Each structure stands twice: as C-alpha cells, then as structure tokens.
Image 1 (tube, rainbow, N blue to C red):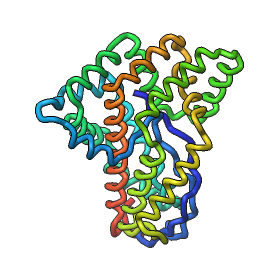
Image 2: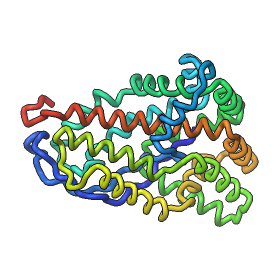
Image 3: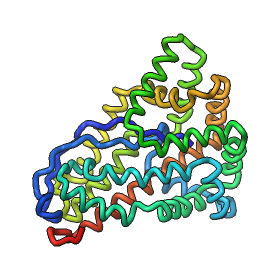
Image 4: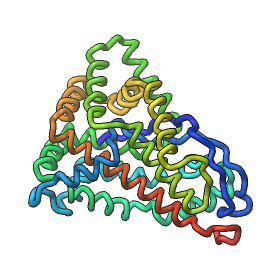
Length: 313
C-alpha cells in the first residue's frame, strides 16, 4: 500500500521551550517546518471512530487474518516507517537544541518500537476490517502484479534517500518530456483514486496538534494559543501547502516508484483502487496509520514530564 513523505510545511507558530529539558536545551524554540510524513491518501483520524462503530457483529476479521493482511498488502512496512518518524519530533516542536534532541531520542526509543506499533494496528484493523474487504485487498495484492507493487512500495516506505524528492521530479519530467499522455493520465488516475479516501491536511494537522498539546501538558513547551486555535493554524498551514503542491507532487513520487511498471499495469492498479471495498480498506489503513503515529508521539511526550538537567541520558 502506497505511503509517501511530502515536503516540510511552513511554520505554524513558535512555541516556547520550557525548563523540563536538560539545561543545555533551555532556550526559546525557533519555529521550524514540520517534516511531512503524509501518504498519498489519508483520511481524518476522527473517521476511525465512525468506522469502528459501523462494523457489524460477526463480520470483522480475526487477529491472525489481520496479521496476514499486513504482510500481503505491505502495510506492515508502512507501519514500520512510523519508527523512523520519531526523528522528526524536535522539529515538529520547533526545538533545535542538541541537548533536547538527545533527551528526545532516549524517550522516543521507548515508545517508537515496531512490535507495539504493529500490535496497535492489529487491534484496530481486526475490529474494523470485514472479511469481504480483506479478501478484496488480498486478491489484488496477492497477485503477481500486486506482489511486485508491494515490493517497490515497501522499499519506498523505508527509504532514507535524501535525494528522493529530486529523483521523483526528474522521473515525472522525463515522462512529460516524452509527451507520454497515456502514462501521465494513468499516474493522475492512480493519485485521484487514492485522494478520494483522504483529507491529508486535516489528518496530518491532527497528528502535529496532538503532539504539541501533549508536549505542552508535559511542560516541554508553552503555547500562546488554545487547542482549537492551534488546530486551526496548523490545518491552515497544511491546506496551503497542499494547494501549492497540487496533484503534481503525488504524480512525481508515483512516477519514480512505479517507473519499472508499464502504463497498462498502472492503469490496472488504479482500477483496483477504485473498487468501493478497496476504498474503504484505504480509509481504514490511513486512519489506523495516523492514529498510531499520533498515539506514539503523545506517549513519547508524556515521558518528558519532570525531565530536567539531571536526567540520565
């Protein structure tokens, strides 16, 4: 299942760093761009509760079935990438100090671990995915084409290539230079199929807002605005960035990820994603991934309560 990182967002506000961090970290935090971890398709985190409430008794998948689903679809790799997202914590709070970075790394290592992340996702998926929806996804991703897609997508999820953005832009530029209208249309269809399940700005804004509120409650930062205003500011920031990026950023990433696939195969992928059951699967996975991410950032922030210069690092 495709998950992409997007570019850093613009600063939303400047929180003030408080004295709960080591002495070397006691300085006014400067506003920093939020490193973006959004996939091509995201859904409101609040949709998870609605999806949970809509599951009928006896239809949900077993935990073992959900575990097999993670492997077949490659969603386990997308979840594993949440571990890497912990590195963005200080920047999300606007704190550059090296002392705080050291403290954060210690605390984050306690909660950003793959096994509990996978377990949290399994709990949610086994309560929401129906056997019919699971079968739809597994039928496609279990095929030869599906497994090839999973292989390249898993590599993309876990990539640490700092030049990936530039390579993606170059891949799309190559398709445009060739005036390959059919391939451009296939890439656009693929992105549109994923976008039908998402409100990326609101979802990622909720992750950052929950983290900042948890950090404030732990005494890490001070905020000059209330919770609702904070959410509105950050959401506006993400919506502005999404408007600037348009669909081209997603198409560039897809052009690179699927460069070894034929145009017909990309069209076949888009068609599979347009299936209503597959759309719901993506809604669930997006909700689960970002709920787990927000939960882990909140848990790490909570560990910062009472931290001070005597904290053993």
